[in-house]
Image 1 (tube, helix red, strand yellow):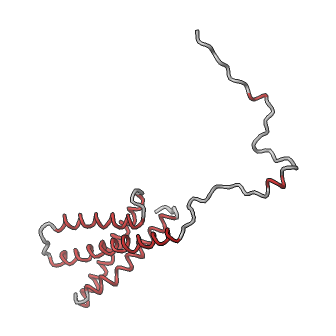
Image 2 (image 1 turned 90 degrees about the vertical axis):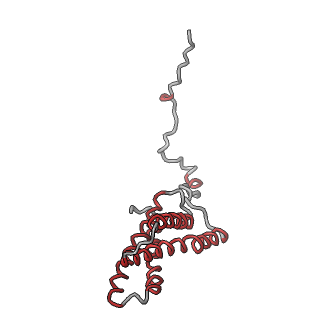
Image 3 (image 1 turned 180 degrees about the horizontal axis):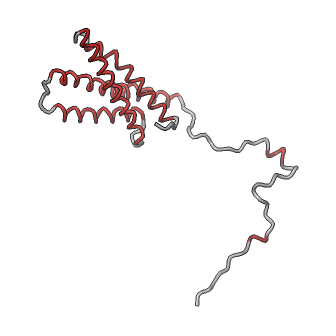
Length: 172
């Protein structure tokens, strides 16, 4: 036969309830300390800020500009009707590499929510390409390089806006 162990009944003991006020002798001492949750993010040191800047300049910025240039360049082939053989496959592979470049620049490679930044880059580039093509019909295609360079900062700002919304936890 097994031994049965009975638990103590703690309901009858006189324990202080957790929500009762402190005794008067402890009140001044307890009020001198603030009890609250710790901050979620530690303070950034100079090296952390430098690393963040280097990642933004050498990973995020080139990846965003490369995605924008791929979308703009593919629009030239759409209008001319002369698609090079295998271009769509190469374009897809290049966009995947540039997407990971952008995500590594953000430092959020494992967080799937930040793929929305890639979507923001693509949608902004496509919208700007359509606007540029409408503008080029009126003025000619002599300024394609300038159009690509002048629309890239708009794409970068749109991507930064999306990243800031995701960092703040806003629903997107």
